[in-house]
Each structure stands twice: as structure tokens, then as C-alpha cells.
Image (cartoon, rainbow, N blue to C red; front, side, top):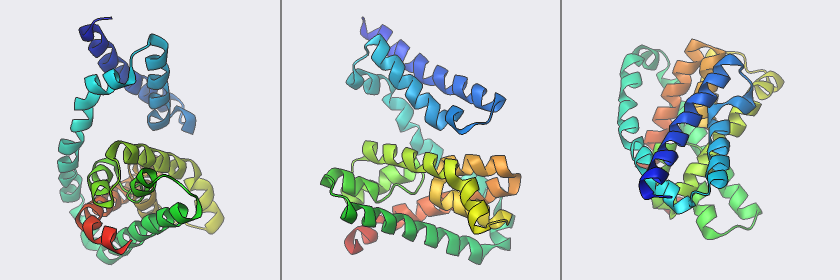
Length: 228
């Protein structure tokens, strides 16, 4: 199979499966159809079925990962658009961001010390509770591997998206502000998508919390690495 054909297949499969799963999830909103879960599984199955070497797949689709940089800059837009909410709840958002950031790192630190794991995996876990573009940047300060961190971020987001509603019911979280902050701080992109399903204000608050938590992680990562 020629390099050109491999490149076309890799790109088409990645984009095609994403939009296909997104369409399926819009028709029936069940967690196992969510693009963040189903699209990677479909792509992995396709790559194995067609026999595309994994290194080649990453080579031909790596520029999609590079788009995380511009996507990070684009986070400035919702911050500006929702500045009225920031003015209304500055202290609540600040406490939510700090608490989510600290609990994410402390839970990762605890897991690392409870369960033996290779240093690369242990270091890559510490920034798993912020959105992918921020986590991949911050993990370098912890000595982690960006691609491995991205996978851990994905897993964290999926778990939060799946269990959030039962947890909210069990511990009695009812306000839009609390739900939005919890999902944005704990489950980043997947949590924000889930928050938008719950309600528009929850989605906005989750988005702001996710962005500020990510910024705080990138800025504070060198200091956090020294402390942890």
C-alpha cells in the first residue's frame, strides 16, 4: 500500500468516524455512542483491520494533534463571551478551579503511591484532570509523556461523563453552578459536553471552569512538580 493511500485512509477514517459517531450520538444520547468513546474505538478497529502500521497512522494524522495549539488559543473567545458570569460568580469559580485542580493532582498522587506503576505512567497521570491541550503542555514539567497523558485525560473525562448524574443524585448536587463547576473541573472536555446536555448555563460554567483550570495547571506545573 502506497504512502499516499495510507495517508488518505488514515485521515479519512479519523474525520469520518468522528462525524459518524457524532451523528449517532445526536440521534440517541447514550454514553457508549459518545464520540469521545466510540470514535477512538472505531478508528483502532479500522487501523487493525486494514493493517495500517501504528507509527504510520500517527505520522499521517499528527497534524490533527498540532491543531490543539490553535484550539487552546480559541478558548479566549468563550471567556470573553461569558465574562458576565465571571463577574457574577468570581469567588465560586475561583474556589471550584483551585479545588478541582488540587483534588485532581492529589488523587493522581495517591494512585501512584497505592499502585506500583512505571515512572513514565506515574508522571503522566499528574495532569490528567485538565483538558488535553493544557495537560499535554503541563505534563512535560512533571516528566510525563504527552501522548500518554492525552490517553489518561480521555479516560478521566469518559469516567466523569458516565458517573456524574448518579453522583449528583446521590450526594444531592442540584444547582446549575455546582454541576457546571464539578464537570468542568473534574472531567474537562467530556464533562463540559455532558454539562451542555444537562443545561445551557451548566455548559457555560463548565467551559469556563475547564479553561481556567487548564491555564492554572500550565502556569503552576513547574511549581507543582517541585512540591509533588
